[in-house]
Length: 467
Image (cartoon, rainbow, N blue to C red; front, side, top):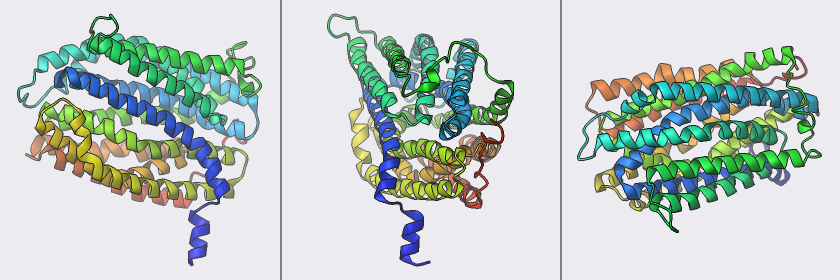
């Protein structure tokens, strides 16, 4: 294969990248600002103390399971939304939107019930190992205090995800971006005021951080919902969306059949990551702080492959829904190539800049050194994560949710978690080598993803045969 053929196969035209980046960049901006403000939030809370920062980090690790359950449920219906939109079937989009609202409310109620009954025990799982001068009791108190207030923000987040997912699948990514930017800026300002007690307000610390997050979630949901209902010409699915709550039984069964593995996958994946993080915490209480600092920083760099995963789901899904299979395959190859190359560059930048970020935190030198090493391991694996993420969304775009379930969460629980468990309980390995060993398991997953994508098992139109 000569250079010209390789270029044609793996690289697109300017128009191609303009179209793709038109979808990906707004998502990158939204996620980038969200993660940047999360970094600033983290730094603010870190100024109070390591216990407070770790307490909030533990709760956010648990809430990630809820967040991804919502994301998985909405995305399960979203596979159909993207293909209905590609087919220009607005009634089909309307039905999937209603389904998203139903499932978002159900998961929220279940999430609050589970966390209310077992939240304390789940938090205590992370407070293990040597305390090294830190107060585990204070971290536990802060975690419980933060979690109680965060309950109030779960429902607006869930409803907003139903709207945002539908808007993105219909090609509208700018409005969710604007809403997200406004929300995170508001969150930042409120954090400054409420955590430290500025402009006459009392210094609320951890409570202030939770209140700021909840308020910003209500505002973000309101912006997205109001825009959607005021722009019925651009979003015709919203016309009559609530005049009836009926979703056709056949479509409901198909969404459940294809969407349930996706939702279960997201829940099990998030739970698996939470359990692996718990394994890391066995090396000492400071491991929670190290992981919190490093993950907050690396998330800023990871927005690139996350955004391209969404772009693959949207663009490739629309091609599949319209029956343009060759175009879908060609687009997917070019998007995966671009995503991996971009993450190689970002990985180099993160590796070089890693020592600078922990210095922003008010914590011990040992935590800063470990966080730097943790970040450098993350930087080395960025291209691996990029390919893995792109493969996952490729398989998902064609409705192959059972395969994605096996590829993602089953692999995590059957392969990665046992490795982390054995290393943390039966060896004397320290945090950074343990983290590197667990991440190296993903290389095998990439090989599996490459085979599945190359075989084209994902090339499938689900709305013409099932919708």
